[in-house]
Image (tube, rainbow, N blue to C red; front, top):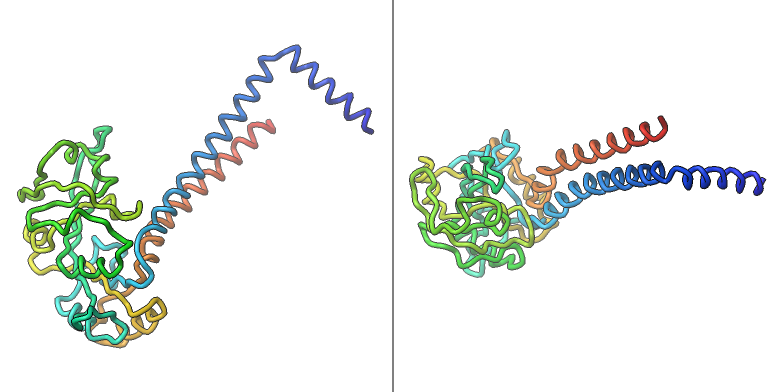
Amino acid sequence: MPKAIASILGIFLAGHLARPRDALLMLAGFLIAASTLVLLLSIPAGIDRIAASSGDARIALVLSSQARTEIESVLPVDAAGIISALPQVARHPDGRAMVAPQFIANTKLTRGDGVRSTVQVRGVDASTWALLEAFGDLVDAPGQGGERDLLVGKMAAGAYRELQGAESLRLRGTALAIRHGLAANGGFWESELWTALATLQAAYNAPGQVSVLWVALVDEAAFDAFAAGVRSDPRLSGVRVVAQDSYYGEQVAFVSQLVRLAALGVSLLLAAARSW
């Protein structure tokens, strides 16, 4: 048997030596296929890594019950006050509940390749910055920004033409001074623009409107009790809660799975081509 195997290998080797072009084509095909698969598989891995860097399990997001994303959510005006009274909510040393209302909007900017793309804008106030100070490893920003400042995420700064070399950006007619340096450990917030809550509400003709609440909990284990407290209050029947880190994982789960399925399809196609 070993002699037979050696004989077969010798025949293949002699054939490749006689026709080296075929061997090079096979090698090139293998390298192209392998590179394609590595590239496809690296995309969901990168997305998952960004999601894992976003948010904290000790922070709950409160959204309207039918909203899948922050931009789709509109909360009742009294939601923040009701939720602030729940016992699972963490508090600042002065007794204030760590509940931060935010307004989320979208704008269109031009990518480096000339394509217009949607960018998320987050309106925050002092309550968000106070909450983030308690979770000091989540966000690093060049100060909290003034009423007419626009804090630009590190990823957004390099991706859009309007943010490169410009001193200001107009949102719905409101001119905001660009300030670079919003960092979030490589997470999704680095792709956003942040400005003052009241300024963004006014620019989008939505005075007092709140899209989402960030709620710091006393600890990670308090989430289930907090969620149960929200569900049991009839005044909050129109809202839902999700852990902040889980929310970002949910947002990318479909895309990651789609790319993995595409990689599987490519691998099967390449295998079929080789067997042909």
